[in-house]
Image (cartoon, rainbow, N blue to C red; front, side):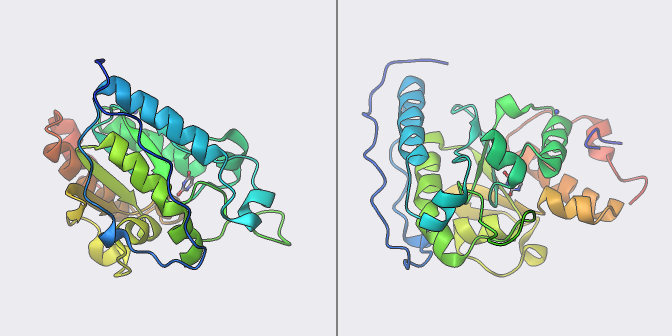
Length: 250
Ligand code: URA
């Protein structure tokens, strides 16, 4: 059973300019997002991501989220990652700690990454929304980001991808797919089939929170098959044991 059942160089390109302001009513138009810029060398990548983080941490585009947030949850991992995981939005734990996927769903994601033979430090993890969606009048619970919030925040993620230029992206759940691809077809239909995000192969799969709600081995196996497909694409080593995870019980 799977346990989730865990460079350098000289800058050639200057850090890119700040993300232009967007009107709150702008609609999601990820397919019109410009092609990827030329890749940065490792040192320039570090500098550009550090600069972008500073800008994002000062973002005040969504007044409701600015007044309720404890942190801007920018992203975590290495800027040299070949694999980017994208989730929906920070929850309460992430808002407190300022890091994506550190709550229950995050623990499962960390185990999934471990089952691939990687660690969180080998990949990059970010969300569609950098601030926790507010829940006025409630002391707990999460809500899905609105279309306007996603449209307002998505340029930060596009810029992160401009800098990272990973070899593959895993979109965790329907909101991640909608934010990146503008597709609202449904994660059940899309999961397991490679999509294209600005020339980068993107694998949609279920969100770890879904696997926590639905403990069926068949659902875990589906996600594992999607991750195996990602491992094949990245030419990561796959053992017979990894190939067999969840098969005996599926
Ligand atoms: N769920 C997400 O989509 N992102 C997080 O960072 C945490 C939970």
